Length: 253
Image (cartoon, rainbow, N blue to C red):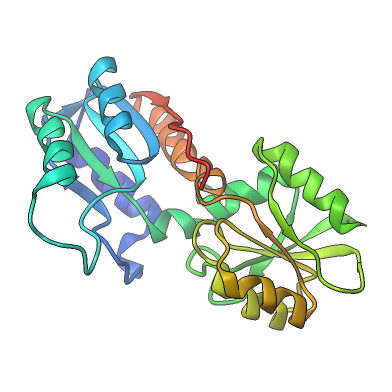
């Protein structure tokens, strides 16, 4: 067992949460029992994940997408009430990390995606490594756009939506940002990337990719952000002796 607040402070320090101006609260969002032995992790604190945490008798739920986002209604009613009630009735803490978990140089979503795609990380186009969100890297050897899309599909277990730029140029230099980062495609092109990967696509993204001449892959918001929270949970298990279990609540988005 480890004190809950000690565990949260360790995560805060590891991820450098104070460096980020985020859209939500990073760290402890709902307080449960004071001591933690069992940590369940998942991408989003949806009701299905909460039910899994209750069934497993988790002490703490660790997620990338928690609650209390800017500009959302503050009233605790409806779905929000049911979710928070589940946590409180079962004395389960909710801990969430958003941008700090995207950016971390080893445990973060971008770092973990690079590992799975065998990308050699060069740095960030929008800040220092560990703080910036738009990452840059290279493949060991140039590949066709179709071959690279196949590599992404194999690594993530789902077919990315591919917008192939005119000219069919090969992919060597890659930029990426997990989740809903489709509008970073212009910065990716300015950084000299042959291809850009994010989780989601918007209507405008297709036209930008074609007109800029950069291949674009929408690999799934959920699919690209499954790995950071797993890495953080595994780090807690190694460093603090807690029991960790990741649960993947499938989401095609």
